[in-house]
Image (cartoon, rainbow, N blue to C red; front, side, top):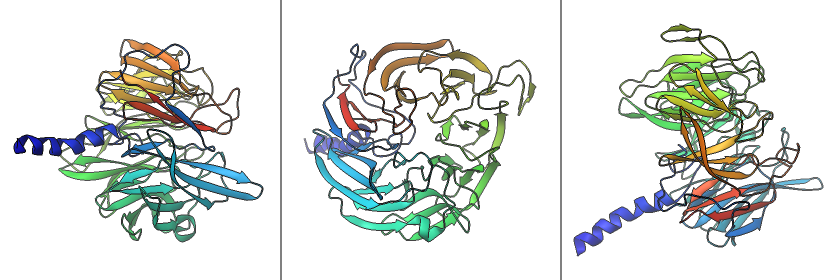
Length: 443
C-alpha cells in the first residue's frame, strides 16, 4: 500500500504541471496542451462561460498556475498612466491580489502590456511594456524584487515596447530587452533580480526565447531584431547565429518553433527562415529563406535552399502575430493578410491556402494550440475552433464564439482579439480589452 501511495505522490506533480499553463504558450512554450477528457464539439453560437470579470485593455495573454490566473492591463486617468498585475481565483474569477504602478507610455499601440506573466517556483515574473520588471510571491502578491530596466539598462525602446515574456531557466530569468552596452538579452538571478549576464549588441525584437537541446546541453534560442541566435543560457555566450536584419523595422513577433532538429521563424516584412539545429552539435545551418516582394505580395516563384535553387513555387509566408505550427514535413501558419497556408517544411513551397479561418485583412491571424491530433484555433474575431490540419487541407470540426472583439488593441472594423488564450484545468481562459473569461472544455 505504501508503495502505491508513493507512486501516486510521484505522479501528482506531473498531473498538476500538465493541467497548468504557467507561462507563454504553455508549460514548455511549445503550444502543446496535453489534457484528456476534452469536448469533441463546441456549441453553436456563444460558448457558455464559467465566469467573466472586468479588466482593462492589454495585449498579453493570461497564464494559469495552482488555481490562480494572472494577467496584466493598463489604465489611463487623465495624465496618470498605470499598469496592473492582477491575480484571480481560477475557479471563480475573484480577485486574490493586484499590484498597480505608474508607467507612462512612449510607444505605439498603447492598449497595454504585451508579455505574459511567468510563474515558476512560487514566484510570478511580470514585465511591462516600458520595461518595469517585478517579481512577486505568486500566492500573495508580495514584491520580492523589482527593476526599472529602461532606466538601468538604457533600452533602445522598440517602437511597440517590450513584448517578450520572461523565461525562467536554471535559477535565471531571461529577458529580451534591447539594452545598451551589449544587453539585447539579459539574465537576472531569479531569486533576487541581480544581473548575471548580458549578451548581443543588437536591437530588440518582440519574440519570446525558448530552450532546446544540442549536444546534450541546453541552448537558448533568441530571435532579436537582427538575428536568430543560439546562446549558452548559463553565460550568454553565442554558439551560432543567422543574421536577419530588418528591411524596414524589427518586427519579429512569433516564437521560434522547434521540430525535428529544425528551427523556423517568420516576420511580416522580412519573410521566413528555416535552419537546422542538430541534436549532436552546437551548430546551425540555413535550410531556406523566402522573402516576398512586400507584405502584401508574400509569394516568390523561386527559393534558394541548402540543396540548390527551386523554381516550382509559389514559396513562402510572412507571419505577423500568431506562432505557426511545424509538424514533421509541413508548416501551418497565417500569412500577412490572414491567408492560412500550408508549406513544405524542407523547401517553403506552398501546398495549399485557406481563407475561411479569419477574414482576409491586414494582420488577420489566429493562435493555435495542439492537443493530440487536433488543433485549437482562437482567431482574431474571438472565435474558437477545433480543427485537424494535414497536407490535404484544414478540416474545421467545430466552431463557436468565445468572446467579443474590442477596439483598444486595434481600432478597425469591429476590433480584434489579439491576446493568446491559456488552456488549463480543462478550460480556456481568454481576454479582450474589457474582460477576462473562463469557459469549460471538459466533456
